[in-house]
Image 1: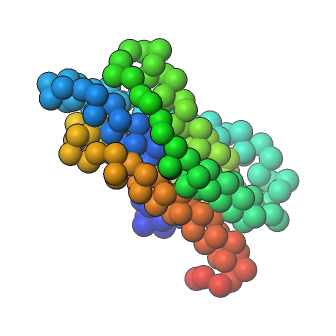
Image 2: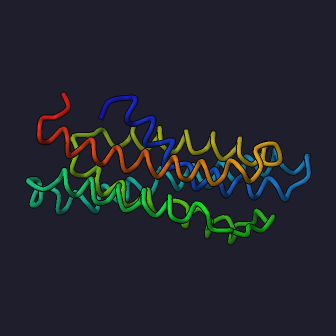
Length: 186
């Protein structure tokens, strides 16, 4: 996976966390947003890094058996996740202001489930998993921090568009895997 594709994938995966962080930031006062941004960033960044690694390890167990179909597995996983992101982008999601462990754990797991599926897809690629998940986690941390601290500036208008764009990018990356397999892309 080239650096640009990895960056776009990481940005796409961080869109759910970004949207939730914006919602959280909208409900915080100015003083709370900096701390909230660090909390949201740490939780979401850690889980967005952990989940693809877990998916990669799980997927590695059956990657060799299904290597002939790996491009289709990658496409189906990313297209499904991307389509769900697009579909859910218009739904109203209430978020609590609370940044306690229980709430953050639930939000972190919920926003990183798509990354688990992407990690399964990684098992079918020739990829260095540790630098990959660290980049995904770092980018998610940054987006979550910015989303929370600038929540009132970004507003809810950007949330829906960000999720749709993230979903479309995941679908395009999956399509790219199929086209590369058949020699349509270098």
